[in-house]
Length: 468
Image 1 (tube, rainbow, N blue to C red):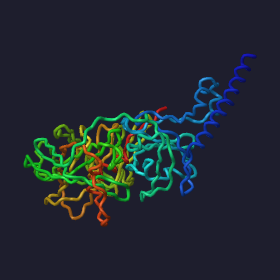
Image 2: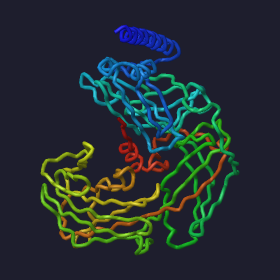
Image 3: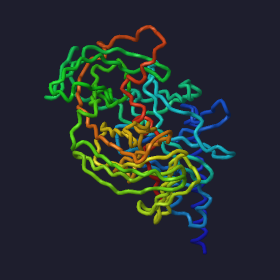
Image 4: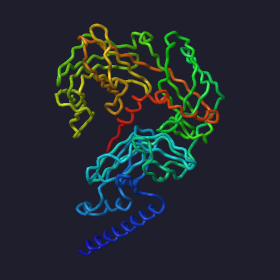
């Protein structure tokens, strides 16, 4: 009996000690920065911490961790709930910043649209929206992946932006990565710079900084020479700027000595693709509302395996464990997935007819092209054909292409082209990049090297997982 009393007394002392320690740590943190961010609508979010991308973050508080090991199980219910969450695709050069806020009353989404880090000189890095979230005990934890921030600073400013990319709140946060950061040994070349791969000769003539409402981006000037006739008509697909410390974005700090510019170029004409890069499905029937015509046509197009899943009428499709498919007339236009550990149900739908296609083996900047035609050869416009989501932890891309039937004569034919770009790398000095031109009202967003479909998809479907 005496031993039990001693154990209880020690436990109570530990609770008091760690509680005091937690209170002191909280006061210390408040003096050093702003742990609670108050937004214009009154929502309050608390900065919880930041870790490398792909690593597990825990909401466990330092004072509570040892108590879970020594307190009786019945007492542990008085300790705060714990959530372990891993966000990101495993890119350890990124960081994930976590925030917590109350989900009640009626709050289910964060009070910001995107985040942007800013250095002490006022340079704002590219915005970040890719995120993950989960909840525990009436609290929501929200993580945002940041791939561009002042890695040479121990503490930096983080801006919270609204849908117009205006700053609505900000805080200062500690850099969770080593300072100074490790650097790559790149050497810049003076422009113009020419690269060739045997099919296309590409010259980076010059580059200029351009700005718009969401920040700055790089606008290169290219000269191309087709060494293969099939590459005569090309267009820039994806641009990526990286500095020696690992930052990525549309534009980076000019304080860095060298930037790595990666550019991909795609063929534009259908006739420039070989038969082995195409897939053709003919005699497609169109189902009625709430009905489907499933299929399992599979073809290898180069190193990519393409599967045509079927045509679906207006309504919602439910796929159970990747096999059983059920279609209903009730329209739910948002994609969703739920699982109880044994049964996984994937849901997607549209108010219009839609096609489903999945592809495995695609490289990062590969694209799928779709062309739907009716019996008379007239092309039927497809919506969302440039966007995709991932299935099975990024193993497969899933494309849902919506279309409307207006004076179209069935049966239909669908052509799918796998476009694998040619990619080029240049090492340039930021000092050679011209400043922005005076504003003329023309928006070059579509030419900024940020394909809207791929970017939107990346934001919406960044994979994440929670761990018990």
